[in-house]
Image (cartoon, rainbow, N blue to C red; front, side):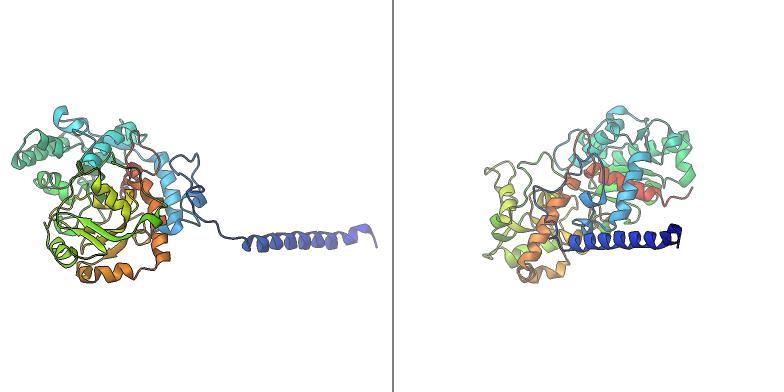
Length: 403
C-alpha cells in the first residue's frame, strides 16, 4: 500500500489525540475550587479598561443583574452611540444652570445636571439626538422663593415655548423627552402640563406608585446624600452585631407601627426620632456600620435617602413598603442584595430577619458591596456609576419610542 492510503487514518488519530487532550483539560479545570470574591480580587469596573462579562457581570456576580449578557451588550452600545440634546432656551438663572448645590437631599438632581454636560452623551445637533432633555430645575426655583403655583406656570409656559419653537416634541408628543427632579417639589410644579406628566419620561427620586409614577415609562432616581460622612462599609460582617436599625419620624402609618411594635426591643435598634447627622460624632452613620439590616419604611414623602445610605454603609436594606419602584429595577436584581417585605410583615419583622441563615446574610452583604458603585455620583462621571446607570435606563426607554 502507498503512503497516501494511510493519510486519512493519520488525520483521524491526530483529531482523536487533540480531542482527548481537550477533554482532559476540561476535566482538570472542573476540579478546581471556585473563585471566591474577596476585596483583593473584585474588579473595579469603573477603572477597567475593557468590559467583560466575567469581571463585572459574569459567573461570580451575574445574578446581581436581571440579564447580565443583555446588560453588557446594550451598555456598550449605549456608551458608543447614545446622544442627548439639551434645550438651551429659558431663563439661565432658572433653568439651564446646575441646581444650587451638589449636597443634601437634592444632590442627585444637581449631579445629573452637571454630569450630562460633562459626558460624551451630550450633542448640540438635535438631529443626532435619541432623547431630548428639558432642563427644568424646580428645586432651584423653589430656592429663589417661587411659590408652587408660580412654578407650575413657569414650567407650563417654558414647555409650551419649546413645543412652538422646535419640531421635536410634536414628533412623539413628548415621548422622547425627559426631565429630572427630586420629586416632592418637582412633581407638583410639572403637574400643570398634562402631556409633560403623561408622555415625557419623568426621572424622579425613588417613587411609589401612588404619586402617578408609571413604571414602564418613568425612572426611579436614587437619592444619594453626598458627600458621605464616612467611607463605604464592606467585608465587615463580623462587626455587625445589631440585628436591625431604623431611626426616624412617625410621619406615615407604617412608621408609626414600626416604632410602636419594636422600639423597646433588645435586638432591633428602633428609634422614634431622627438622629441629627451633624451632631453626636456621626452617631447616625455609625449605627449603620454596626447593623446587619437597615429598615427602610415608606414615609410621608418618597424622597428618602435611607436606601442609598444603607447600601453605602454596607447595611442590607430592608424595603418595607407595598408600592415602591426601586432605582435601577430594570437592571439590578434587588432580591440578591436586599430584603423586600410588604408593610403587613412589620409585625413579624424580627422573626423574618432572624430566620435568614448566616450564609445567606453573608451572601447578601457581599452582593451589596458589589453594587455600591452603582449608587455613587461622581464629577466627572465614571463608568457604571449612578449617572451611567441612569443613562442606561433612558437608553432602554428610547428603544420603545415609536416615531
